[in-house]
Image (cartoon, rainbow, N blue to C red):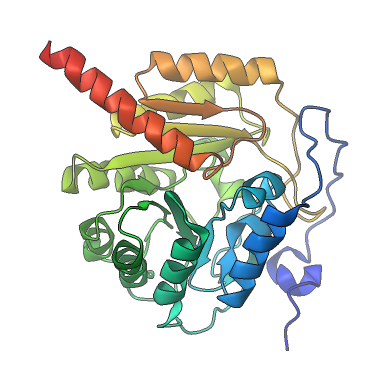
Length: 318
């Protein structure tokens, strides 16, 4: 039996890689260890419903803060991914069959947590004909039925090997926010995200808007992987050309010595400059800080995103 707590079994595709030094984190990156009643209550609900969270699987630094407030990002379709991205701490290998009862368990947990906004993500499932699109759609519908007041944000894989109908299934289920991360600049894809294609991911986001112009779209990148500032600005332009509404930019943190090395820690001042540039390019919402992650403060950010759209529409009609 494979033990995902053992690094060589969790990441067999990385076992042959040389170790990369893990530099000491600067003061602006450090966070408190998870603790408190809210944190443990959220953990208990996740365990009772046998749910996987990306907060744990990806080693998110914000897990203590988010879980203490009852916020957790559900990761559906198992804990094993068919891709082997060099930045990611999610286990790689051959996943188990889909659990048909999982959408109901997710919906039940959302109701028990009393969430105003939920983020649902998944591993890549290249082993499935539709990449898990129907499972996403079923989960969205289950949450809508069980917690009709909860707004839903999904963070999907790229459906690279799937027919166009896969994306259509997910969009037809009407999530409030469709998020798909570009992750990094195109020049680093072969090294950082070898199983993906930058322009396919960009086109995916554009296609969502073509299928449903009212749906909010969102995408994010990490910095500190070796990219240069002009490349980041070009990614912003590419996102805007695809009509992406919301951009997130956060610091890459290296999970283990076998993962992609941290090229550098980007300063808070540089993040501030990226944020200013993104607002100038017309995004409805921007989150750019060292600890920004796709689902960090997602509920509050969604409220701001919706308010900003209404504000701009009102200005156009005035």
